[in-house]
Image 1 (cartoon, rainbow, N blue to C red):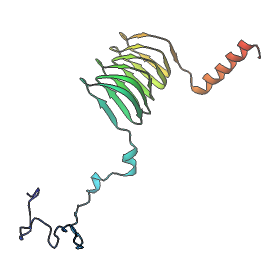
Image 2: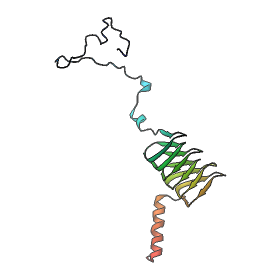
Image 3: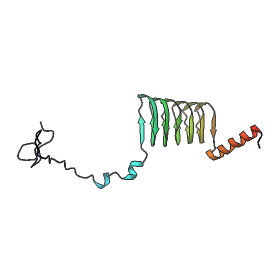
Image 4: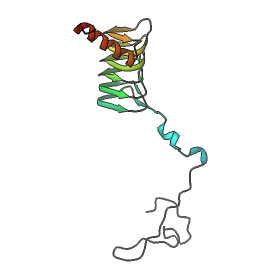
Length: 175
């Protein structure tokens, strides 16, 4: 049964001049597949391969595990586990995550039960709820949002390390 329309007049179902090699025969198989190259506008370049794409966990889905990688992540359903991505993490309204989040930027319009660490920017939207600690470069809270936890923002890593060393020196009396 042919899976394609045969354009050869011979009706054999094989490309002209080719036939399947029978088992044990030494006849070479010269049936090749001729594929036209993609048009210039559809070709993938090296730049396209490294562009960050957004992955989505859709509403109605519940997943458990650990997510690591580059790119952006949007959760509209439920996820239990830790998330570590280099892009933007978005938690839609009505979504929930139970776990820690480490991302370049976090947008929380849903429910996050866990800590957010090393984010450059955290946006807590009016429908958002966070139960956990936040360490971020910048933190924005919309009216109506709810949070229970400790927040540290406005400190970059280098000044935070210097402050920690100074605090340790003062405590030990070595200043």
